[in-house]
Length: 241
Figure 1 (cartoon, rainbow, N blue to C red):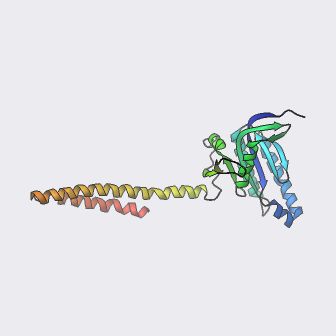
Figure 2 (figure 1 turned 120 degrees about the vertical axis):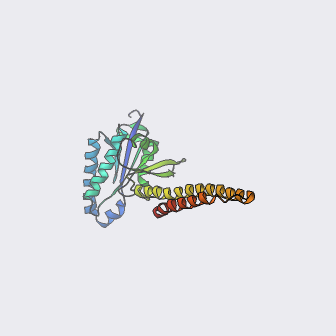
Figure 3 (figure 1 turned 90 degrees about the vertical axis):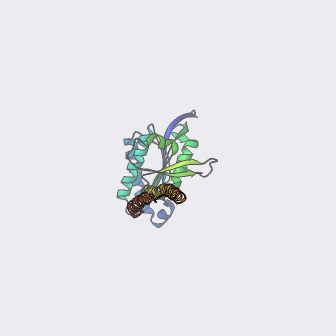
């Protein structure tokens, strides 16, 4: 019996979405698609200096010495499979950097389990990564990343931070950026009205002083300037909203 060792590595877990249903519908076509997809995975995993550690049915577990290479591999695999898919198999991928147990050629342990759970939470054709992976790749890869929040994977006691690669999950990166952009005009309005309120309060005090002292209502000129300023500032601000 081989000795079990531990090491820190990057785990990529992949699985075909809806495999059982498509297999039931067309066994020959599905098996052909699966073989073609495995060839794509093998090609890109080897290109990025990884190795396939476990295979079971329609899924696989691979490991990489580099986190960046693992995520880049996942991106290229999904791009290749997506370009060639014509109603065939679509894969979910999860990537995690964690401690694993090595038993011969197999990888075991919580690190592998979390990568597999991330895979199950991904959309077909999507890639989910853990916080540990995101911290290593977010400044090294030009693709977008979307924070999906804290998720509690099945059979895990604690929640984990999850990110999608390329913003392909629900509420994609483009929508998230649009939401942030849409919020800016509202924030500008709040600042505008706060500033206008302060100026209005100052003018009210000046009017009160004129009234009590019997002065010559000199405050009308600042008031006119204030009104013009309001008309100038409010127009373009509200057009953007």
